[in-house]
Length: 342
Ligand code: NAD
Ligand code: LMR
Image (cartoon, rainbow, N blue to C red; front, side):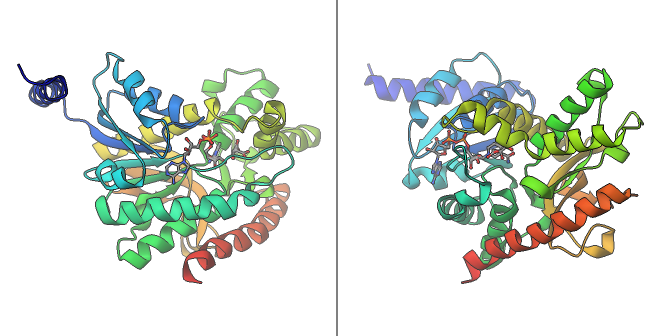
């Protein structure tokens, strides 16, 4: 008889071989920060996604337990766990999509920018690993402050010679999810029937809901516009305060991250007409802004972001909001760039 650890390994390999022969092809996805408040429900929901064939769960703590737990779910994806920096490269090799919720969350009284000092270094290290081990993977970056961590990731990839603006996406999906929910409440609709574009960035005034472009078409009075804009811009703070020191949004974020990752995977598969909002590389010539990064509606496809949509017609309220957003965004982007170039 083989020792138990070898037997276990043998079983694992056999199971994978069977799967490879019988199952539909799927994508290989890594979650970095998989043992965290977002990481755990995100990992669970990705294990339930039929487009995922292999799921790598990486963290600097507790990933073996989370992996053992999730691996018992009777869904198709094969789950493997990776613990600590020495296993980062194995976690990343061969991945099609890397989702990053690693980093510290806010406590009441903090801004997202207050997380910069810790999270900037975490994102830098993880992106260096991606550049080395899976330079063609699509990256979904959740770690805050997104307005700075996405420019940090871009600079790391540029330094490594692997930067592809189509493949780096800051996740702003939670702003859209919240906007759909709050607008549906005001209109008395099912949130699943509502689509609110949210552009700009992912912090305070940089979160710019375009209420004039809501689908289905509708009109709001001035009071409703103020209420909705403030509620959407401060949705994160609402959760941070309600959790009273125990972290920020995790469950709604995991839901939003999986909705977004699923859209990226369907794009990779070649599905047509996949449109979502995300914080991506940008430029004035495509009808967005002169800023190098901006959250816009994007069309997702086989190579990632295949088209960045122009902002479309804005009303006066939105034009004012855009000016405020651009000022803050410019500084946050520059802070991220300088962190790597310094
Ligand atoms: P958490 O503290 O519960 O979990 C973070 C996890 O990251 C922990 O398990 C930790 O061990 C891990 N981690 C730390 N350093 C790491 C490293 N170097 N490599 C791999 N893993 C590492 O925090 P959370 O509530 O899950 O939030 C995570 C991040 O997501 C925060 O920065 C938070 O602000 C951000 N966030 C973003 C959005 C968004 O809309 N983009 C929404 C919610 C939260
Ligand atoms: C959110 O919007 O919920 C996240 O960015 C977390 C936070 O700090 O608000």
